Amino acid sequence: MSDTFDAYDDDGNRYAVPVRRSYINTSDLSGPGRIEGLPSFHLSGGGAVNRIDDQTFEIVATGKRLTVRA
Image (cartoon, rainbow, N blue to C red):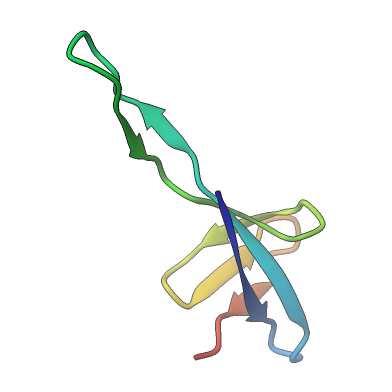
């Protein structure tokens, strides 16, 4: 499953940030199961993005900060 949001740098440039969600298999002898794992963030071009807080992200390769606008 994947969602995407827009974030902006201090110069007003827009970046599309896809959110990748993974699931952890919790199946056991009583049956199948799964839980959602931690999301990961990347630029649409593939570069990694770290989450600072709910509204702030940082591009790993450049250290550039991005902000989600309400």
